[in-house]
Length: 170
Image (cartoon, rainbow, N blue to C red; front, side, top):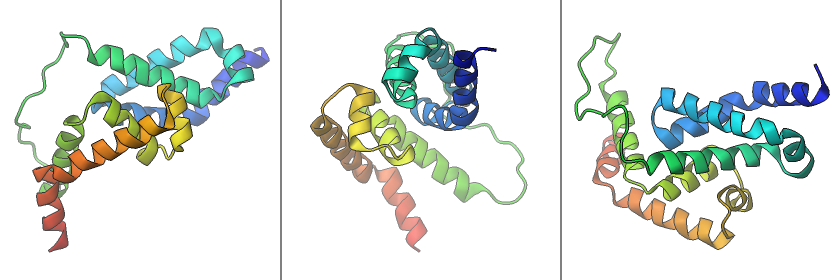
């Protein structure tokens, strides 16, 4: 195995879980997140030698993920349709509060625009700097800051999250 293949394999082994988490936060669906990561890696592989030499490989792969997700989310037809109600299933113990929290957070994230969600995920969950997020999204740092401010304002105004925070405070 040559050094380029080894380097790519090592990158995938070390960073795949973090990339998977980012993809899930962008898509809200594990299967779609797996597809997104695989697509980003497939698109990055032919350019890997150049990416490794010039850029931060992770920034490049994250940019491919965000751009791919943006193009996927612009499609009109989607193979699956989410339902409004989650079917009842037995679960060990009382998980109602945890499920309610997850549903509230998921629906609040779904209310954000694709760009707001990408900025939030990259800044908060992936702990990238504003400059790195600007590099991933190919925009100015000021755009990252203003997009994050609008996303946070939208989340603060979300009644589902306000109710959740109120319940947690009691």
